[in-house]
Image 1 (cartoon, rainbow, N blue to C red):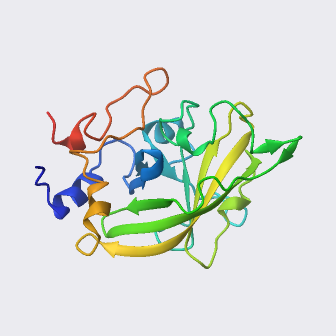
Image 2: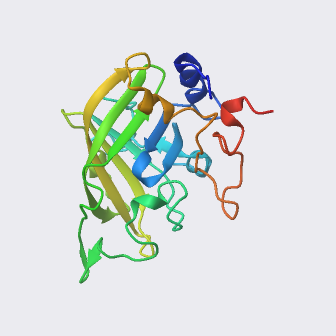
Length: 222
């Protein structure tokens, strides 16, 4: 019975909910029950504790002078893995607290267990639908995964547990882009913060108010 309009949902998505950070939008991975706000600082505890953040320090741009743009080039995202299978990007690791299949016989490997699953980014202009193409594993200091690409791609960075010196890299390619008015209703509904639960926080690490229906509902719940 929710009657939240598309324009209202777009405003909830872009609400500046964290002082000192700039809202970039939201990321949804429906198959893994992930819905996180995106902010602008993947290199601080403040940013990572608020949700996902764009990551833009690459081997060719070590100072991060270029601000990434959704739907263009290599859009990097980073977020916590709380090793619980549900909070932040934890659900992108195949098994909690198991290095396999990311490390096998001492060698860094990848995984195709999420291949084909959609990842949807949302900002003020609309929705960007990516499709996961695979996962790789890199050392935590490897920033080459964020190097620019001509084709529009998405690169999600999260920790591996228990070997936290490594990172799981989830790769995806852009499949569709919609304005808020053009997008299929089921995609728009993913970002209705009055009805959808977000999963940025855990009490033992970064307690705080969620931005979804399990929190302040996009600022509409007083």
